[in-house]
Length: 129
Image 1 (tube, helix red, strand yellow):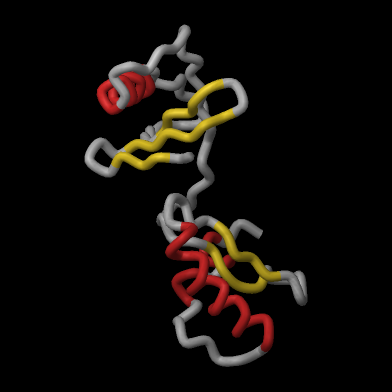
Image 2: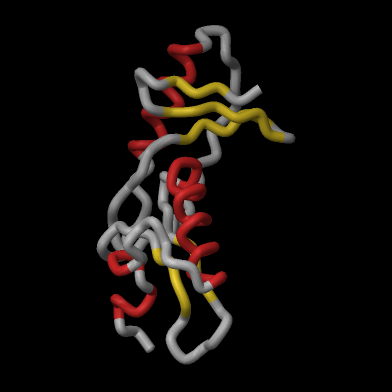
């Protein structure tokens, strides 16, 4: 069963070959090497939570979490692509941001006036195309 430790800001998830301990975010560049000190601290947190926890050598892993330059999610039509809409970029807030985002995009897709101002979330705010 997954466990979330709010006081230390990490979670444990059972996996096929062990336990995944996760919960930190490193803001760096795409070319920056991972800082494994953060992962080592997570191992210490897991041992404090479960003093009898036995493990072999931890295997550290890092993945990139997509984010936008302004930290806002992206919603709305793609300019020049009629009928194609975007809804992504919630970062760590997908569970809370997903429902209002779905409501916003549903209104846009159906041609209704959304209850949320779509302007700040418009896909064309980056002018990448």
